[in-house]
Length: 171
Image 1: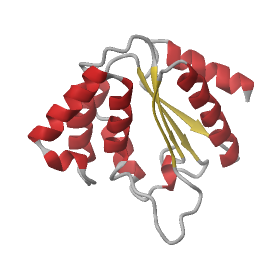
Image 2: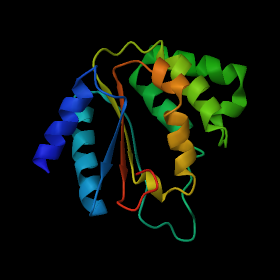
Image 3: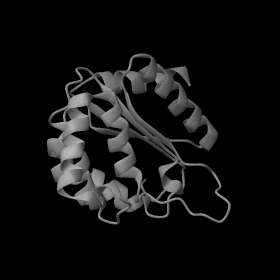
Image 4: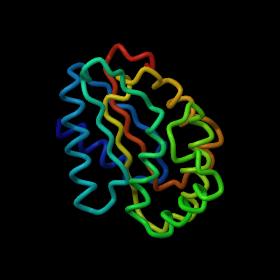
């Protein structure tokens, strides 16, 4: 675990690395534990942008990614006042952005990509999504995150760590 944690920390700190890293856990709890430890480390440094942990089971409710982009934006707004202003401006122009949406690409562009240009935080900012593949629509989220528009325009200090199980279609 320590080797994986050290490797992920190095990845997150290096601005030349890729935007997204996927941690696959043979034992899902192990991947979640590593994600929690990395969150603690970045939280201590005031560099945890957002952390979303999808539970293993949810009493007859299937988790969805429809609120995920707005949740990440809300969490990032708490990290940086300039980003919060950009988010407020985007929502004032289009209030539907703050609600659940199946248009994850539009939410990414308007709630994250454009507002992140105003982010004043220097150094790495980590966004963790644990158990992403537990959501019924996680492939839509991955498609939006992996689009050229997002990958080209998100600042180089932002990092997304996704954890999934070994049977994930993402692999």
